[in-house]
Each structure stands twice: as C-alpha cells, then as structure tokens.
Length: 273
Figure 1 (spheres, rainbow, N blue to C red):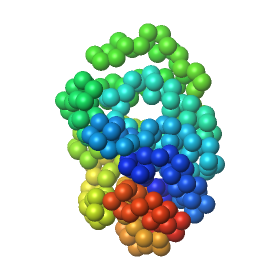
Figure 2 (cartoon, one colour):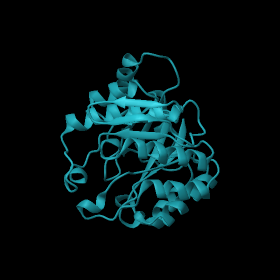
Figure 3 (cartoon, rainbow, N blue to C red):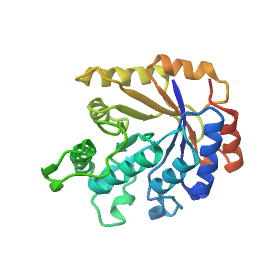
Figure 4 (cartoon, rainbow, N blue to C red):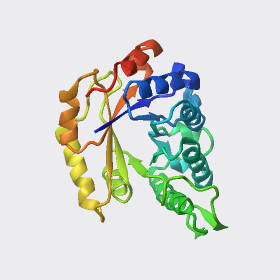
C-alpha cells in the first residue's frame, strides 16, 4: 500500500500556495503522493485552481511525491494540449507523474461553455482522446482521423521521462469505467462521502477489482487507488482495503473536513499505517 493525499482545490484550497504547504508537509511526513481535483468549479460559483499550475509548483517544492490529477475530465480538454502539459510536468518532476482521467461528473462545466454534456458522447471522446495522448507520449509520429479528433503527422517533443509513457489511471464507478480501466494502468475509486464516512466497504472494492481483472488482457502492473478518510496510525482500516486489492490510499482533503489548519494537521500526523 502507498499513501497519498487527494486535495479538492476548491474554495480556500483554490490558492496553490496552500496546496504547496500541504505537499511539503506530506513529503516530510511520509506520504507518497499528491493528487488534486480537476474542476472548473467557478462555473457553478465556487473558486477553483488550475490543477496543472498547482501540480507544477508542487513538483518544484518536493522531490519524491508522485503527482497527478484525480481525475481530469479529458473530454473537455484538447488531447494534444493534455499530452504536452503532462509531458512537461513529467520532465519538471523527474518522472513522478500519473495521469488519471474520466468523463467528468459536473455537467455545468461543459454546458456553461457551450459544450455538450451527453454521457455517451463524453465516453466516446474520452476513449478516442486517451489513444491519442498515449501515442503522442510514445514519441512516434501520430496520424489519426477519428470521429471526434484529427491529428496529421505530429510527433510530441519533449517526451515524458517515463517510458514508454506516463501511467494512465481511469476514474469512475460505473461498469463502463471499470472496463475502461482494465485497458490501462490503474483505477481510481471514490471510497468516502462528503461528511467524512467511508461509503465503500472492502468487500465492495474487492468486487470491483475482480471485475477489472476479468477484463484485463495482460498481467502487467495495475494500481487501484481509493479515496478515503482515516486517522494517523489507523492501520486496521487501511489493511482491510489493501487485502481487497487497493494499492494506493488517497486521503481525501476538502473544505467539508475542516479548515486549512485542520487539514495540515492531518497531513503532518502521517499516513494511517
């Protein structure tokens, strides 16, 4: 089991400087990763920070933490720009990036800007965009004429440090998300509720992991990340989830859990095990 913090960079946490403080404390206190939300929450009235700017400053402030979004709604972003942004962050951080992607769960973040929010359309765009991003990271010349995107003989440079590409995790709880995750390198699930309770039992997680494994076509490395709420030293809780197949525990930090001082205290206290 590895341990990260998953920060909702909304409201008071929309200030990247506060996230950097959390990141430094996490590295000093034995955590393994920093993940941040990717939302245009200002479209529905809540301040929100850019995840890539936030992760870039955190990369400069740390030397060991794995960094990534949890998760990026790839259908509302241009695949080529995402490929370049993530590659640049991987270079900046010395190869410490994981890219987690999903459909996007807040329709207003599409419709407020004149983009369609239809779930089937977003799913189709997600699958096509993931293929483009992965090919660009491999460094080959990419030509792609798809339903939603077109690429004409483009080779990305500079490439990510990680070869053959940055790991890709898929977020989402639906059957389709689990099938999609099976084709890539990991899955991110939401294990907790807004009011700080665990919503998924270890048995439920184990069932989802089993579903993913049934759809896997190879036996390569595969990560299972779960957001959760714990106390420092709460080894029994996380052990049950580790036994269910979870490889990353992501301690969920958001405004409903407390102010910045309270969240910093939780991070400084260290991982649950």
